[in-house]
Amino acid sequence: MAMPPPHFLDPMIFVPEILFTVIAVVFCFVIYFRTKESYELTKYEGIRYFRGAFLFFGLSYLLRFVFGLLRFSTIAFDVIIPRQMFAFLFILPLGYFSTVGILYLIFGSVWKKFNNKKMLLIGHLAAVLLTIISFVTRSPRTLLWLQTALLVLAVVLVFFLHKKDKKITGMKLLYILVSMLWLINMWIIDERRPFPFEVEIVFRAVSLVVFIIIYHKISKWVR
Amino acid sequence: MNRKRDRLGVIHAILRIVNDHHNSIKPTPLLRKSNLSSSSFAEYYSELISKELVKEIKDEKGNKYVTLTDKGFKYLEKYKLILGFIDEFEL
Image (cartoon, rainbow over all chains, first blue to last red; front, side, top):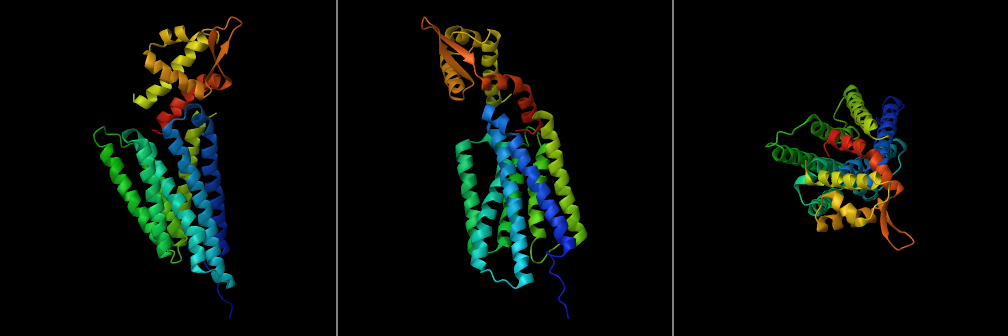
């Protein structure tokens, strides 16, 4: 009896996944490169964090796709890749890039309130720590839980910092949404696939709409 | 307006002064017209030189003049757009 195709490699899953990845990565990199001139002229820290976040998210979405592809290919084609190799090849860079991406988005809206050098140092140390914990446990799921906790902490921090000046704006919520969608999109490629296919498609569509909104807003100012 | 944002504004003001003087002004009148203290001006001035927004040239008599570089002109041209970008994204 023929085996059913594995989930990720099913064309119904694979085609939207590859389309989503290509569009998301292209938007992230375009946002990064289109803001290059603004940063180089001003060396403004806020712009630095903003574009850095999209560079790291772009790299993370790219790695996420390769990770999903390789992981399910091993199931489909009976190829054995040692868990340690997986952890080394993917959890290390994926953990670091995506954590820095989330942190840079947060830094973009709070950098004026902190000592920048210390904030950067602590941010990178936190990213390294999260990555090491995920690497030691060899589990992308650990990374997801840790990043979720980090995001919750960051949201509380942003709300606390801006509570007095009542500056919880749509843009800050958009940044939180970008980070949340990253986490949801990582859950989508988890082995257990927690969401039905239709819900996955909705999440991907929402993610792309968010990237398009950001790109559209940038286009008004960066010519 | 926060301090960092002010910094962009001060740089813009200094570049505007140079530009308004046919892209050639001596450092002392530039200091006077910028309405900055000597120490602040020195700080901004060295930043402008290091970021290659302005450069110093000397005439035959050895007098020093400040002129805008291509990057300096670009800064003046893009300033409002960059501020718009910073405001829109609350950076």
